[in-house]
Length: 120
Image 1 (cartoon, rainbow, N blue to C red):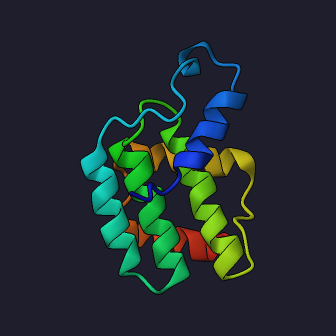
Image 2 (image 1 turned 90 degrees about the vertical axis):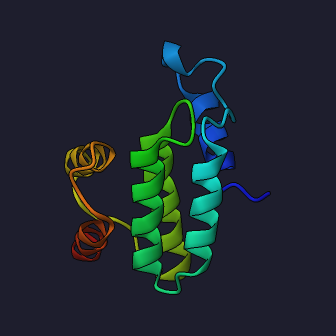
């Protein structure tokens, strides 16, 4: 099974110096969320919508034990870079706050897509 972001999550966790990240590389908490994500993303053609869906699902539904927000952001930016040749240009603090809000269910995928379009 292809797991979106798994290699990225592993690298993030392996490079982290945070105590809570130790031993968490590649550990999947919820395979069902990842299966849903794969099915959902494979049906999306628009790269902004795809990046928004990936950001939302990984950050808000926490399929990994650690690194969900970091993985979500990098996967979304990777989609934008590869498919549009763009990346999120907002200040790092603004991006971090937004991703935390996404993880707290304060934004729906449509809002995330609009935010990404405005900030690329």
